[in-house]
Each structure stands twice: as C-alpha cells, then as structure tokens.
Length: 200
Length: 349
Image 1 (cartoon, each protein chain N blue to C red):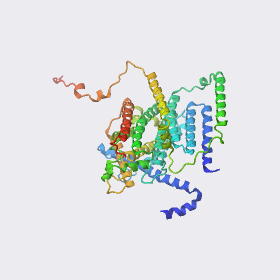
Image 2: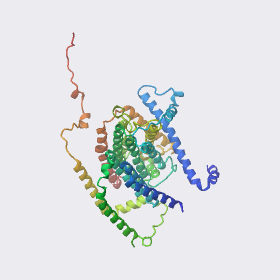
Image 3: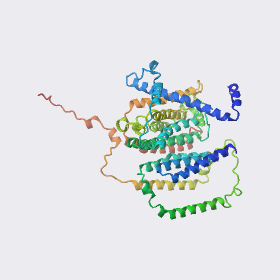
C-alpha cells in the first residue's frame, strides 16, 4: 500500500466514524462538531484528487461559515433529550422510507453501467504546473457562464428573501445616526450661562 | 549548506522528508513564539511610553525578562475546570484558538523560496485556515458553562465572521491584479510596474493602487484579531474577559498566545499582500527578509499605537462599520478594479 492509499483510508475512516457520531451523539453541539470533522476529512479526500480549490472551498464555506451559524443556533437550544426523543417511532416510517430511497438511488448511480470503473476512464495524470483552481475558473466563466450566473441570481433572490422575511420595523428603538453623532458641535450640547456666585 | 545536510539526510534515509519538514516547522514556530513573548513586552513598553510612564522595568535588565517571568507564572498556575463545564471541549477550545494561527504560517513566504509549502492556492488556504479560528472562541464560550463566557463567545464569533467577509473581498482585489493565488507570485507581481522601473519599488506595491482596500484590510485585521479599539470581546468595562473568563493558567495562556500569533500573522499578510513582502522599497538596496521583518514590525507598532490612541467601539458601531460600510465599499471596489484592469489605463499588463 503506497502512501496515498494510507492517507485515503485514514481520511475515509475518520469521515465515516465522524458521520456516524453526527447521528448518534446525544449532545447536538457534539453532533455539529463531528459534522465539522466529517467536512474536514472530505476536504482531505478531495485534496488527494488534486481538487484543491474544491477542498479548500469546502472548508471555507461549510466549516468557516455554515457550521459556525449552525453552532450558534444549536448552542442557544435548551438541550432536553426527552423532548427530542419524543415522536421517534412516529417519524421512523417516513425516515426509513427516505433512507431506503436514497440507498436505492445511490446503488443505481454507483453500481450502474455509467459510473463503473470500466465505464469511466482513469483521470489524466496531472502535469507540472497544472492548477485546478485556474482550470475550474476558466470552465466556470466561459463554458458554464450562463448556468453559473443563473445560480448566482437564484442565490441572490434567496438572500433578499431571507432578509425581507426577517425584516421588521420596530417603533421604539433609540437608534442614533453615527454621522449626526460625529457632527455634533459643542454648542449643541453645552450652554454657558452667566450667573452670580451663590453665597451663603 | 548542502555539505551539512547531505550526511544527515542519508542518516535518516526514507524518513528524511518528514524530519526535514519538522525541522522547518520548528524553524518557524520557535522564533514565532519568541516574537509573541517579546511582543507582549513591546506592547506594555510602547503603551507605557505613550502614556508617559516607564512600563515593566523590574525583571531583568530594563524589564527584558518580563515575558519569561509571565510565562513561568502562567505555567505554574492551576487550570481550574468549572463544575458543569464540558471537560473535553473546555480543553479543545484554547487548542483550536492557537492551532490555526500556527497552521497558517505553512504558506507564508519569508523571502524568495523561503516557504514551507509553496502551494498554488496559498491565499485560499489562508482564508480557510483563518476562518477556522472562530471555533476556538465559540467552543470555549459554550464549554465553560457560564453566561458571561457564552455571551462573550457569541459576540466575538459574530464580530469575526462579519469582518472576514470584508477581508475576503479586499483579498479578491489583490488576487485580481496579481492574477495568482500563490503568495510568492503575489509578491513577485508587486516588483513590476512603473514605480519599479523608476527605481522606486514602493510605488508599485499594492498599497498605492488599492489604497482603500489596504485600509479596509488593516482595520478588518484589527477587528478580526479582536484587538483594541475592537476589543469588546474582552472589554474589561462590560464583559470581563469574554470567552476566556473561566480559563486560568496555561489554558488562558494559549488564548493569549493565539491572539498575539494572530496579530503577527495579520501583520505579515498585510506586508506580503500590500507592502511588497521582502521587496526593497528602492532599487539600490537588495531585496531581503529584513525588509519583511521591518514591515511586520511597523504594522505591529500600528496595532499598539491604535490601542493606546482610540477608545473602544460600541458593539452596534462595530457591526455597522463591518456590514454597512466595509462590505459595500469592498464590493464596489472589486467592480472598480475589474473595470480598471480591462481599461487602457491598466497598470497590470
């Protein structure tokens, strides 16, 4: 077994174990942190495939941003295991159905004729100076520029919608405009009056 | 050099690449920790002189052994784990705060070719690693099982996440004009241009054409490392020590080391991305590591200077500056730079 396989099996083992812990951990915060570990291992495996841009983007977007917000929400929760357990048996049939469907789909995709080892050619050996980031950028902005822009529009709409949904005007806020605050002169705040000294 | 390395390499045989990498890592981490130690002393001295006092001068000649005394004191103190704290995560928190600050140095070039990992996506790696730093803060805040630590952690995390975006956009401008993600190439690209042709290299560094981004990056760097005037995270007047309030001894020292290592990292990155890294400002002096050291020291001095000068920001002002000022400004400047590059006035042909 060469060094790359050792690294691959290491990352895969960590990833599978971490993913298992995501669904078995009792504490939601622990589960979220195990999900972070799983993302990391996935990033490592992508790095082995010379897909450094995707690997680093995965860590940056999912670990650096998405999971931080996840943790924010999860940490605020009142962790009450009894309540979380409630309704486990009533949800089980739906969950099991979706699980089985996903397994069937994955078997069809991975076991089918289209993605078998004999159907897919071995990726070309990368030559010196090959940059995955550059290649990806070139493809994304030339050949796939319309799908790419469509995706950005969809994301923008989602963003605006999220902001619009949570935007509410409160009447009694005491917000101060910093520009006005900075532009304050002494005369606006202090009034000097002349008065006679008070004697006892 | 080769003559010394050769017999050692044959002695270790197949394990040599591993040993060599380890040696390089130690070669960076050890001086870095020394810098961190003396940065704490420099901070106290500089702020002392700015406030017309002397600063620490009791331990050793002119107070030079003060950081060592502080280190020994922190090492000997007991680490108290609060009751009800999540023990495992309580220990992991400070480790995660320091780890990324050290890992990021793997791609930082110190001089032409002096870098551990000269990777193509160096800047991306840096962005990814520095975005992990926030976990140390969140985990420490949550695992302490204390309201104050938790509030401090949430505040710190919100602040770090907000300023990361502005920092990222400032970096997008840099990599647009240098058309590379490799930090060594970014420095090399700053050595070319009209200023460099005249013998005044510092005029073709990125700080001049990208001046607004340079300022945004510098300020975001201060906010990202939670330094004054953005230090509401540990603001003594309102929230004691934020996420670190329950930590003592070496566990606290790890946060402290992480903060200062981050300061040095941000200064190094600012020097590399905007101030030409190891390039010499004028053509009659040679390029060398010394220039990078001078630039890093200058920006670290700015950090200390700001701390002694500016009063602490209010939290809503911090958020406003990040989201309503910096992000629109950087977004707009990305477009400006894009148009500039494609126009006949482009400086980067």
